Length: 145
Image 1 (cartoon, rainbow, N blue to C red):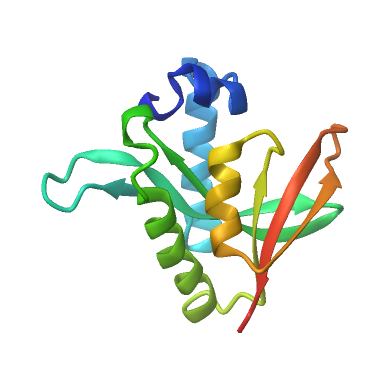
Image 2: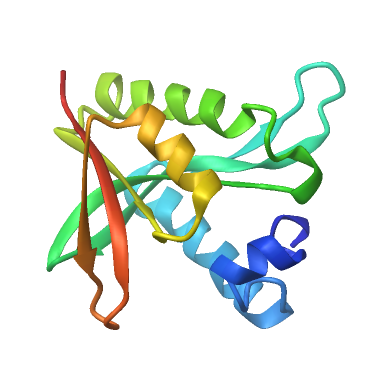
């Protein structure tokens, strides 16, 4: 809950700092491990082992297709130090090398400047799309090398 309990995070995930939605999100992540064998992993600081956030792979629906998404979330005080980019690069390599994905994407709100910077540094292509709920989002993606 520490990842979603600040004004910046609540802007993108407005309910995740409340217990019931946070619990459903955790249960969804656990189900991803059961179903796919992977999901979001904890990001820890190398020296101290302290929790920084998460990063990993989940399937998301984009325009009716299930795409493998690389997502990342950091605690407020841990943002801006390159942790998300470092973790996301490792997850991208895992997606292609171990999962054998043909395409990996990141879905980012067009106003989320920090996530745009991370996704833009990782992925080769970008375009906008409209979600099932009518929101315009940025879709960044990289095809298998």
